Image (cartoon, rainbow, N blue to C red; front, side):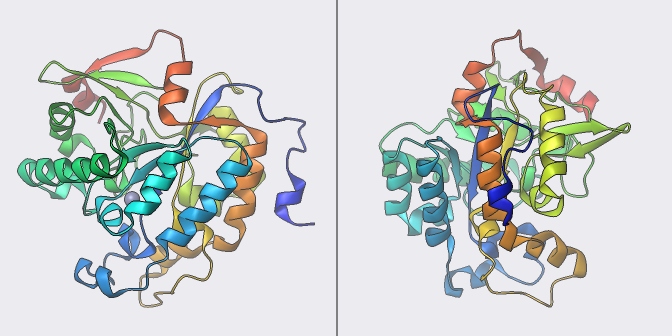
Length: 311
Ligand SMILES: [Zn+2]
């Protein structure tokens, strides 16, 4: 029996419980931070691209499950595949920005970040002919060092963000920030909605349970347990994310990357698609905006300066 045929042993069916947020960061395998030491941005244009086909496979899966997703699209990808982005929007999915160049926000100056974020927003809006109001930073790189990015997002007309991971990690995280959707009052007086990445508390540990590498590395029943735990047994919406390259076991391999980077990038690529089908059967999903709107309790409101205290 394959993994995808074992779905739902604990009796859940789709349509029950909280509407969680389903998201895909639309980038190619060579954009990933884990491989940045062995692949230069100068080489991106000459490498065999696989993002279009992989995203099409996800689109077909979501359509078959009648679930809507938020696609955070990298500007670099949108410039090269505008028809793909138009198709995602035409199928009723939400289009949001994943920046332009996939560089870490805390490694950029505010001026460079503002320029490339404006550029990525304009490219997407030019393609789908409607406002793009949601943003996710490359590798969740809005941290204590780059909270200034929230002001710039608000100035550029973004109304919501999903870049803050409430966890300790070598590349990202604001460990004590809220675990459920909240509102950030930016320094320039604008309210920005924040949808954090999922973490679960188990044995006094905070464990990431948002998707991506964690989704591939943990056995599926453990991931499902953590996701359900994080959601308070399906009473609080959680954020799930994946990348198109994570369902592609045939992508080119970079064996000169470090052992740890290869572990992060290549583990269980062949199991990911089946697991995603199981997840779609086990929980209810919608776009980030739909999930946020469906969550009614009084949301936490934080001033941007208070975020620094939590970091
Ligand atoms: Zn990314």
